[in-house]
Image 1 (cartoon, rainbow, N blue to C red):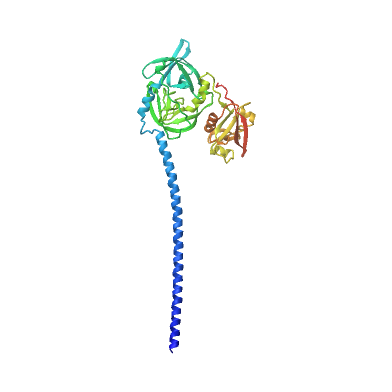
Image 2 (cartoon, rainbow, N blue to C red):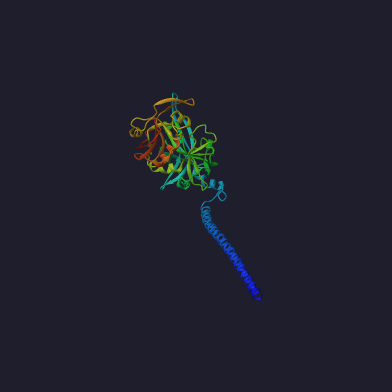
Length: 406
């Protein structure tokens, strides 16, 4: 009996021991799983912390760059419009001249006027103005804000960019050149300042913003050719403003204002300073600037024209006519072959549609004129991408020199 009791006690102890082992192993497994879960969480958080540290480092680099930009670029809050005006006002002149008209009763002299500014080109002091201000003029003078007036004469001019360069016998003590900066950094929305003499009101300042870049405007004196790569501004440019400086917030010249477009209320235009800088080596020597020439006439593509031509391409510039013996003619570009009514307007369709030049997308005629003016010269080869009969085609041609305006 006693032996059986001892046996039962031993068996109970063994059972308890087994239960203990099972419970211990279960707890250990749960603990291990918990540890693994915690390790996974820590690993994930470590990865997130590393990512956040990298983002913080990038933000610090960007902040450092922006701080440098702010230090290098005086803002409107540190440089007022009044300060800029005071810096440039003595460099802006009134340009006057007389146009002679021969009548039955003798010669008649008509006074015309515009604006201009002083510039130092490689040590030579000149007056920059618009071509249409002085074209055909005699007895040209320049008047400074202090009232002093001196004779001037035309050194060089370009009707296609509406630029003219004058020399003057004004003493060096009164000639205060402005700084001409590149216009390539201009962006839509940037503030600009125009100083000139609208309606004869000397020393007037107007302010606005860049409304658009790369416009092309027409003028009767250019013989049907466009004045390319023009800046559109919100500052009003009235008769008498023409030829004055367009300034950035540093007081640097980035354009030459022009009122050549009549009835352009509320819209102003300016020739970019890069055009001036590009042409100065020619104009200062009295040589004509050689503009690139394709030898085509055309219209902007529209949805309706594309529909009439059964094309899917709704952008680009449709060639209407190709001039005989022109670069376009020699390269095999094609003009229109059928006149149709498009929205009440007769359009010659069927010609090539220019969509790219040297890989640059051409949305319209403004883009085409601006690209050629900025980036090419006569005798340079360019690749013209066109849509012909629904197929894309690359044509290589050598640009010519634009003929003299008739």
